[in-house]
Image 1 (cartoon, rainbow, N blue to C red):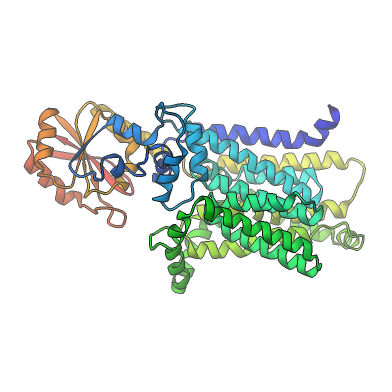
Image 2: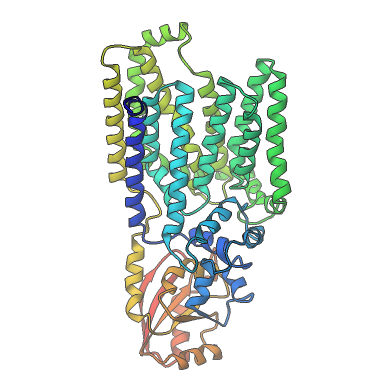
Length: 529
């Protein structure tokens, strides 16, 4: 027992702290990004990927009840139906693996729409990614202290916690990215036949999770091919290429719709990625939009440790040189894993459909090897000395405290505390009618679904003088009415509230309006008699 505590005590402490912080921020999460709501709908809606499909093909002049909205985001009593999930994803732009897992998790609580379905699933995947990162660093450098420190820096970083809190496939892609890096490292350091099919399986699972997995996987596999060629290990090279290409072939076999998605001309597609790649004039702005938040906000603790560890490593340069002569330094496998991430990062930044750093979330644990490397240099240069274990444990505790401070001072994304204000704004009027003014787009209605669930029903229309709208308001006689205006010109209708609200008042017996709140796609108003 004492040996187990000595071996895994630091890791257990770090993982316990990460779990506690994840639960804390999960509790604080008050809202969802539109893509997170799509996760629920695409996973659980029965052969109806979007709200328009659930409403019979169009939302215009449709009356939607609370149950209609719940049916879109929850699983019924019929149990798992992975065929429905696959059907929905064939009409979306992503492969289905994460959605299959999410659907199975939702089946444990049928008819229940809660953030905890996604957060528990993401939390499990996140802890798995942290464990794989620990395995990767120990495999590379043979140091459980270095590995525990790296896991603390990633697991408590703003960008790591944001990966977990966004109920989307990026946390699974991150875990599979680290798994592939671990498997290739094991192949370099201690090759065994079972690794080749496992690498092919990981390539398949990664591509079935998110197509952006391909960039790191491609450059990592290319790096191993060069490594095998340099060693003239043609048998390993052949097995590796065969299994890696088999992983790609399995994607085509299991999800042939990927070809349509990759070559489509949609916002999230291969065609869009190619257009972004050709648009060289936009490179500078994209790098600024995506890297600047990373530089200013994310991984502050990692940067601090790196700039503290690097000078210390230089001061230990004599010991480093001695360790290099004695071949105790482990640099080549680490560079083989790290360099593909450094190549993939600018490429993903350039071609991503929107300037959001979630597209390179999966690269962040690999990039943290930039911290692990100088820590490895220091540990190797110092060698063994009296009290070394105590010093290393103290260093891990100091880095853990630093990472905790970062988590406290720089909260992660996707918490949406403003949603509490949105809920409070509509709560007093939830028993009355609700009107959604949109030209038939499902995106803004989906974005507002959390608040729309407060109402018994709502009426969706693009015509403020619609006779069907008059009938709805006539049935729901009330002194007030909450009205949503779809005002996004890029994503949806682009209605102007100052133009459409007077027309609505003119065609009804309401006398005026006042704003309640607004978000990126819509604005909510209260009409009163």
